[in-house]
Length: 118
Image 1 (cartoon, rainbow, N blue to C red):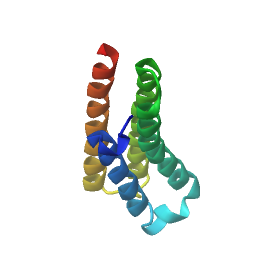
Image 2: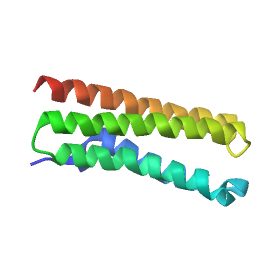
Image 3: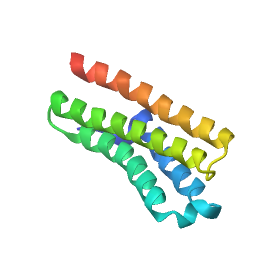
Image 4: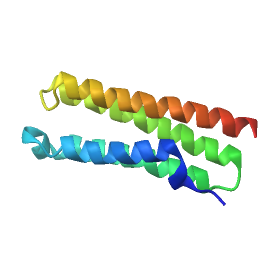
């Protein structure tokens, strides 16, 4: 039986969702419903695909979901850059959030590698 909640990458991704919600509640950011919604959906997609992938019956199916999670991390990172470009997100917050996306992507790479071998 899978235990996605014990996966460190799932825990990190879950924290990222909370942080995305927090930063997108500030100032003009909160009024940009399109970008805010898209960023929240991308963050939720990361953690959801990790959970779903861990619960599947084959490693090949799991790996596919982990790739989707990694792609959502890249999507979120792009949206964070855009938020910085238009003045919604400070450079410091952008750096912190980008680092978290990169960390999650690296963890997913490791998980993908392990699941491909077994």
